[in-house]
Image (cartoon, rainbow, N blue to C red):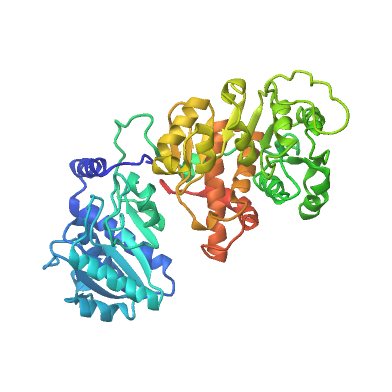
Length: 536
């Protein structure tokens, strides 16, 4: 129930449901009543709604929503475009009589003066390159009223003018706060620019079944059920080392917050013991903030001569850990390049250092073959190494780039990544042979075998410093707890997003911090485990 489908596939699923004995009227009743109930439950202090309905089935859903809200005691007004008659819709006649019909733009404007909720049910899942003039006028009127006061905007299935197939959006489309998606996920809603119009996506189950002839590489949502399957289970009798040990390698004098966020997120995600390998000069600041962390102090030096000593110290300590997290706040200046080269077993990475005297060439080191999540400056360093994936072919890696970092890894411009992020994530995973988590809008997990998993939400509050470090800690924690690289990435993306949504529920959609997300990780994990959602 998680494959992302296009409009033709959705229609085929609807026809299959009708052939199986569910009438079209019943499907409309389930959709409209389900959305109205969702709005009613969500809008505790609201009781006044305006519904914009179009001529087709989406408009029919809107009429059912209007009647159901009236049944719940709401004051409801209905404005229709190209729908002169209500039509044969599965709505209670008595409830429909309580709905006020708006006959003009002026009447719509008057209704918007006092409404709490606006429901866009003009057009549905089909693509529409251009919106009719009257619909644009109505949407412009809504925008004018939104400048005066808050009105929550709900879209039915997809925002009118947004394509379910490719994510394109007609000019003058209306931004939604919430999109109530009917039945099955629409692929276009998770692609930009449409993804910027949907707001939060909620699913309304109406009894549709996913087609059974889909390709194995079809993009799928990371549902709560899928994340729950990936999450490790902790049983009575474990101790902190058997619960998973992670070593975070990062930190520089001007970036000491990054490894701290990664380490604390790893602990909050269930790792039993987390250590941070960082310059000794910044350890006290991190230890004061998170006393539960332990440390591997590294020489505080800007000379490349320190690289070999740093690498040896870390290697001497990593035999006792289950996984590594490499890169948060590490920096790119000396001695970082030589340090990573020696640490991960690349030839020619360490040369005689800056300073007095001469330095012996380092002893050869076997290429890293363990489990690690690599982020930030770890990725920036990899992008400077020719065919690095061949050296690290025996490792189990999760790479977590944003578009700029993925562009450097693939040797293309950031704009090219942003123009087709899913394809580039897939290409990178296939080329490198490792799991790629691309952090962009709806983040995706791409696997070397061509599969693609898409985040269920795209919280706007994640555009804040440190949120990527949190994700690195969550994925690293799950690797340390025994998850495969694919399972760690899938569960890590869902868990960090769920914690961000919890933060937004407490603090608002923007302005919460990466540390706030960390605080909600334990509760988010419980929510995933207990969720009964089929899709979301």
